[in-house]
Length: 344
Image (tube, rainbow, N blue to C red):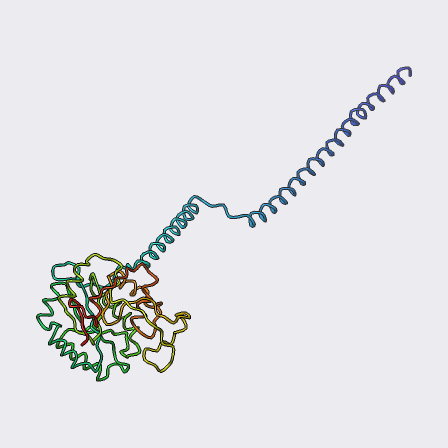
């Protein structure tokens, strides 16, 4: 019996030990649970933050400019260089136009020696001037073999005429037939032959001639004068290599503003209160160097024409660096003995 209390005490101690070891475990488990919840919460919060940041970066990338690759940068630089070269080419083209230069796409005729021609002489004519043309051919203007030999010397002469208002009619057919025989016409296919269209005829003549022939000078001659051909050739030969040459019998005069009077100018009001024409070469005989003829060819669509062809050409020369040469030998009504033309 004495051993019974002792045994009971030993049993209670044995039973109390598990209770003592379980309590710290519960505390540790509790703190472990809290730690796990804390870590899980942080991980969830980090995941949400990453998702939010990803969305913000995506939206921001849509608004920001695209990052250029090396190839893109090279393309941009190439475009800039090409743009610079285009601007430079446009500047060069503008300068060339202002000076009257143009690379012709048509094959140009030269003399048989391959040298640039001295002159292309365009003798204006009309549909009703057949007899007058024959008179010229029998006087100062060569024909046949003599005409070809003159071209070998570097001088081309052609009758200049446009087309009839009724294309292909008897007027056109007669000119074509005459040209097949004489081979001395320059037919302006795009021009309608009429007295009131003479200013436009000048544009067509110089534009066509400068594309067809490579010459030092281009000469416009009316059919109411006779030429000293050798005298004209000598005058031009002494001026070889002269650019910007606008040569003729220079004049000016009053602008006729009364409709119905001879030489009426519909645009009279453009010449100021004094109603006086600017200085220009008389239309009977005038000469342009190659670069001025090229200038007309390049800018023909925008060149203003007036009622008279000589005034029109004078207005074209005013806006460029043309050298005006007033030569009395080209004044056909002059009393000079050495003049190269006379009224027919």
